[in-house]
Amino acid sequence: MPINVPIILTWLRIAMIPLVVGLFYLPESWMSVPTRDTLAAWAFIIAALTDWFDGWLARRWNQTSAFGAFLDPVADKLMVCAALIVLLDLSRVDAFISLIIIGREITISALREWMAKIGASASVAVHRLGKFKTAAQMIAIPCLLYNQPIHGVSTKLLGDVLIVVAAVLTVWSMLYYLQRAWPAIREKAL
Image 1 (cartoon, rainbow, N blue to C red):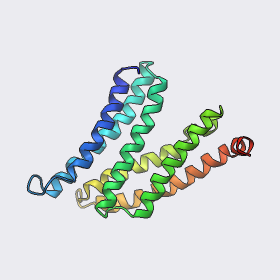
Image 2 (cartoon, rainbow, N blue to C red):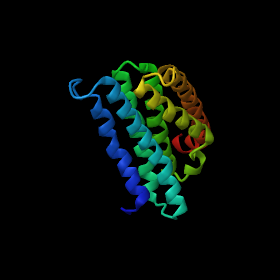
Image 3 (cartoon, rainbow, N blue to C red):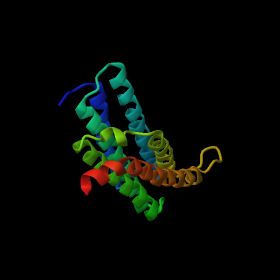
Image 4 (cartoon, rainbow, N blue to C red):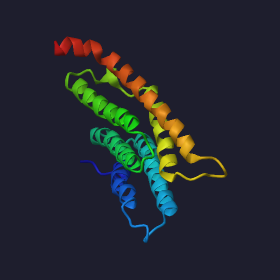
């Protein structure tokens, strides 16, 4: 396993998952709810920024690796799924939306793995739809974790709207990837 700054940042993102989740299990006598929500939102934002930064560094410093290409999306999916489960437990996100997003992540991860095994991974390479979906999620989730107004603007409302947008883009991007993979699926599976 290569060790370099981009991979360390990816591991840091994975290590921050228990921090974000653990904050919600602290007793209120230790930390007020608004403080907890603020810390969780900032921890998620920092973790999300490492996602962008580790990829940028890997390309800039020519430190890309097969392991990094594997670990980065795993870290992203773990982070998003853990946050959605916390938000679901707090009744800040609908179960149906959580199922759509988590189900898509599992489906597309499995599809990409299978397509790589049959040598057709290029047909399910990351597309801009997936990037828009990720952007909507990465803004919606900290808004829902924070759950407090900022200068009179409801972060809950913004988060609710963006998580629905993310869910729609989730379904749309999943259908796009499945449509792209369908010829290989039909050829290899039948």
